[in-house]
Length: 323
Length: 278
Image (cartoon, rainbow over all chains, first blue to last red; front, side, top):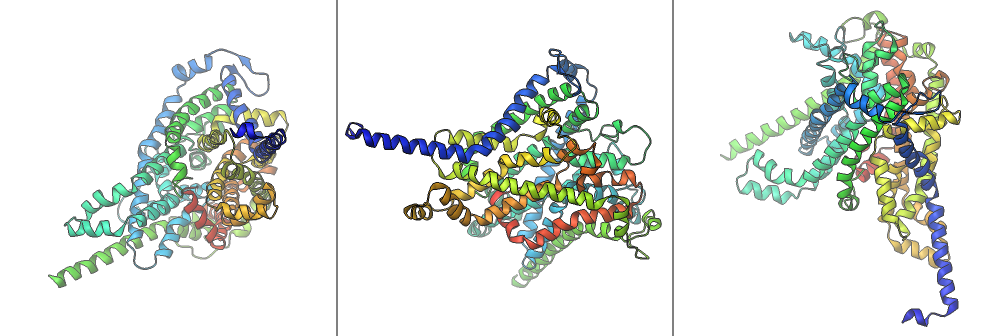
């Protein structure tokens, strides 16, 4: 009915307003539209193409069909170590980080005095730039003269070789990661403080001990935050690079040998998937093969992202939780 | 019964603080050992000693052994320009996603989220070749320029904050004849100052800490190394000298920690707004 009632002039005014609005949106969104196309959409498409080519940056990419993928799935001797190491991060490092962050947050939650001081102390390491933190830990854990092994020696323990041992290099990276749980700890602290006090009180009245209170009151309340931290942890594990790169190159230090083989030191134990990708693309200049590795990484990351985006509605509106 | 309960409470109280104190020592110890070693002589830093004796000032040495000021200049250039770029480009995008109604808005938001979550490595090969075609590899521009085209994380954080600003403020300005851009700049952005400060802070820290991209683009040209890349080469060039290396490490950490104490409010705002950000 209203459409009929609209005069020609009104209709034109409305169209003008709609056009103005569209122009406004376009203007506001323009930085992102350019950024998305040039730095995201185009590289994704281009990467898919390059993964079917031989490309060394110097000459034009040459189409070689699925050779890169055949090499990836059947021949590359480094692929399984890299995949296994990355899965190790997901299966061991991420859960330890989450559990430790909850533990620290719970200890903090119960503090009666000095909460601000302790919170700052636990948060501070998060601020240390990854390169600096890693250098610090390579020093702290250096087998010969490092403070950790010196202290272990004083109580009669023969410290491991840490970053110089294929068995201990990943646990050493875990220690480094646990030192930097500040952000996760802060969101757990916030969610612990959100648990209604009366729930604890009634549980206590019902005779629930500390373990049962944790199991039946605390845990259900912080489950969304746990899920969230695990997801973020997995995303970070899939791109874990800086610490592994710095630890390997520094721990290997002055040892003789070409600089091509220092990544993953010792014995490929720190060769994570992104490190392998970097090595192939930017040390060996097998950029076509690196593109194939990137496709694999993209598929896995998309699967993880998809799981999150399916819950996006909730995440988006659950303010204060989402990064 | 009553007395026993009270004694147990007291013990629990002490025990809980004991755990906190032990944790605090474990968190602080790495800093302490790094400081202690940075004050040792070269000789002593090679020994298992934990405490410096005699005290040695290595911080001047650091500047002599590596062009630290140049690295710092590069880092400040990268971090400073990135921060400006992120704020300038992300505010309008976040405004369009939060406060203007249009078709495709939710789809655009999902794409922003996807960009935020995918590892940077998935686009690195074509991007490197892109910058190489423009003859810009070896410079800081491949690190800086993309920040002027919207940063997914910042867009998302700002959008979340813009959503919470009541529409009445904007309407009041519109009644006074302000256009939409005017509303964005002088009403919404003004009210969102804490969030913008947090975004600027995170952008600065991200660039300061960034290692992967500078390694990728500036490796071949030491003149353009930022601190992170310079520091990662420090020990390989100055082998086992842990005292000087730890002094350099401290110099790299110090500005960030100083920034934290100066801008603690922006940090708290940012972390509670976003959950996590490394």
